[in-house]
Image (cartoon, rainbow, N blue to C red; front, side, top):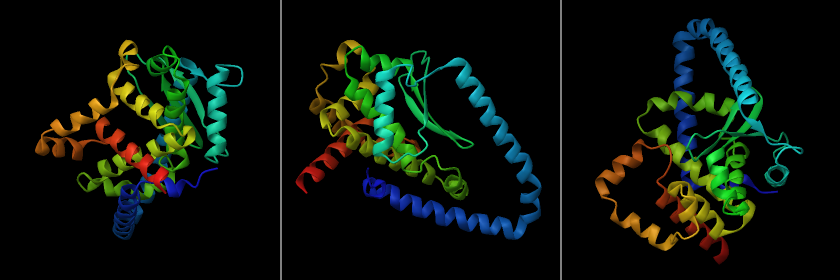
Length: 258
């Protein structure tokens, strides 16, 4: 099992602390001045959230394929192994959904159920190249969001008002992605597969993915205009892929040096 807190990116720790302090203070002010209004709207909002959770479950169970011990057993085995490593007592439910060309995956929690959604195009990109290790990293990354508490309803509720602060929520989101990348790397302990999994998502090409020169790709970071690169970053909830691979490569060096 992993100590998840030891894998957290320092920026996540910093931004999470700021988010919780700011969010907590805003909640206190709101409760002090608008306690009656909050109580009045609490039940309808809770009802809407409950209905949204049921709607999501209906859609995902009715329109996607659930990975299980009897469905896509190789992928299910990875999920079980990674969940045990990450001490996920309640293993998330994993579904493969028609990506319609979208190469992505995401983790989400509705009510008390944790989900991981893998787009079919992403799965095909990995498996048609016989790169189960790359898919394993992506699964570890998404399970890592749950293990790190990024989908925790109460923690997110506490932090929610802090999203009123410009760019703070996006910065926290980027840091969470870097943490999840570390977790994805740790569950497979393979830097090359981790790098290739990430760059393959950006590339999106089955025929070219095996021939991507990672070092050449990372040199593209040097060509990004400083000002517009900064502006693009502060509005983004995910770090640009060049930065993500640089970050995980540096993390790998530190881990192996120590």
